[in-house]
Image 1: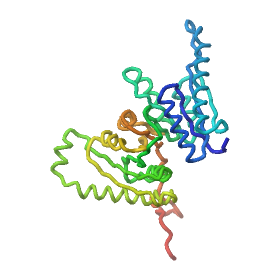
Image 2 (image 1 turned 180 degrees about the horizontal axis):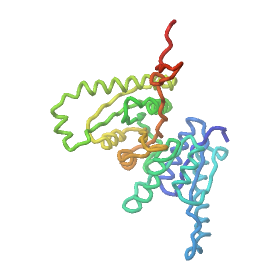
Image 3 (image 1 turned 30 degrees about the vertical axis):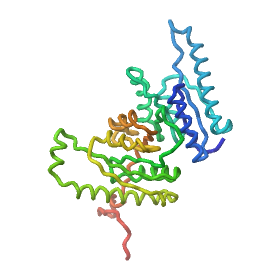
Image 4 (image 1 turned 90 degrees about the horizontal axis):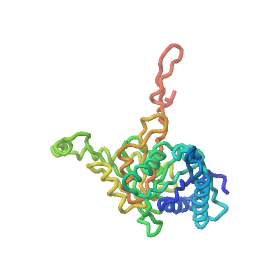
Length: 313
């Protein structure tokens, strides 16, 4: 086993879970990481259902054993561990995520009430885990890659961390990076309003902001210097525009909303994109706020002084 944090795979026995193992194995090959398979089984049933407790445990053991065999076929037995937890799935997986570099979950694209239940687990783990979470559609395959990574940026000015991660993914895959900013006014008058305005200046300013953020992101990922980048600024319903871009992509990278303590949460757009995306979706936890030195006010000898760059004496 390596000394690095492993890639955690949430195992549920479904088709999506098998796709998640395949995706995690491909990621492990890029970073020489181990796989950690985790299945959370319900707590021991109480009276009058206590008689099924043994069967539940046996089924969980069999499920985890089969998943382990699938993972071993990809990366070898020495790089796979498996853990069976008892309790609630979301708290169990979120707790384990603290010891992982990445969490990978499968999405079976079920319908009706079954979709509500399984989607709830996926969305809640993606919305609360302290590590990045990848949700893999059940139909995903590592074969015939598109060589394209898409990153959807909402807040252009504070996107450096998100862009750096997307650049790394693109470099690792020898892929093009598409930086997408999709926007729509939060009003029923959006189309009427935008139709009467010249948005070219605003779009150009947005592109410049993204280009500046990309320059700073590239400095964080030296091996991504040769990644080809295409910036797209599009007007329209964000979830729809983002989902359209996933039709010919190997990975979509998005971030969580920042303003919910302590780890942010998954918004409506994020949930919609996870549900409809044609490719795996990586949800990046929000980066901590950074206080710029120029904004720091100090007191010295009874005087208030604003910190800034050192000046020549």
